[in-house]
Image (tube, rainbow, N blue to C red; front, side, top):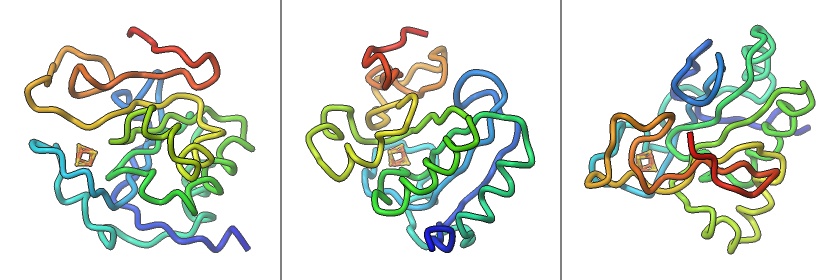
Length: 159
Ligand code: SF4
């Protein structure tokens, strides 16, 4: 039944190197309400954007490649009821999951629904994009307020 869950997908990039370590399959899920000034992609805010794909269809693409997976958008955590099933399916394949979100880790941990949604995530890149803190030299993130958080060790990775 969970296999019939539908997501609005803006894009899927295979073998990208900019959304986490190594070659990854990046899934861009539509929808975001953070409205960060200077957002790299305001078109991603529309929850009805992109194309609809079932969980199985997304997994077919992921299974096509021997890559770990990054979930981004938009903000994947705008879908806390459906996202865990996708994360679980990816983890069942033994792949690591990086998650980009405009929420801070403190906001996630303070919200039971969001906290539950990230229980199987390996790494979170957190926080809104802040134009004044933009730094093109940062690896895997846009502004210096954003942190790369190892969810197993609960510490910030300084990479
Ligand atoms: S969280 Fe990301 S997608 Fe959402 S407004 Fe901010 S930069 Fe844009």
